[in-house]
Image 1 (tube, rainbow, N blue to C red):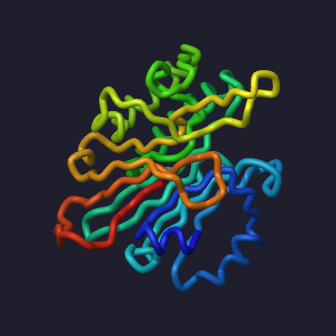
Image 2: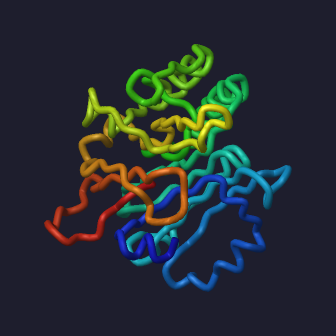
Length: 249
């Protein structure tokens, strides 16, 4: 992870299925000169399943003033990062339940309620990213094509609408077809399935600050590709080629 963020100029990286306990996070302190790790482990089985984390590159962010909120233990963690004296960015990493439509829909409903309470505290989500374990456009985002259960789509749409969040890659590629996840071969047919489970959503007023949307292999052993984008917050000068990239995965 340290080499990945260094080599690709990634400033903020979201990780899912981390299996990280607090003791392990402390062991990773060997990278404390470069990285700060915010982690929310699964409350029932922290070393065996689930978990979500945000990894922050200290070299290019105001990491000392990051505020951390565990929104949903093991499933959602928020970092509020100050960019300027009067500008902050709320970045929410999620790892949604998989393999169960009822649990996935319930997660989005509960997340919506918790984010509403967050807004009442004066905080907001500017960037939502992670593994959603569902797609919005089954005909374009799954191979073979398949739509999600309507209960899942309705719950996700309401959460998205209430927080004014937009799928950045899809807005740039309205008719594009690509995927980020490759399944293991089916035990009978040997066929694989593919889906764009990993996405980045941005708040409506932030979309104009975002560019360079990409989906790339991480260079690590994984069945998921990375989603990356460049975010230049309001008031930050554009320097030109070679500037450090504010990337999210």
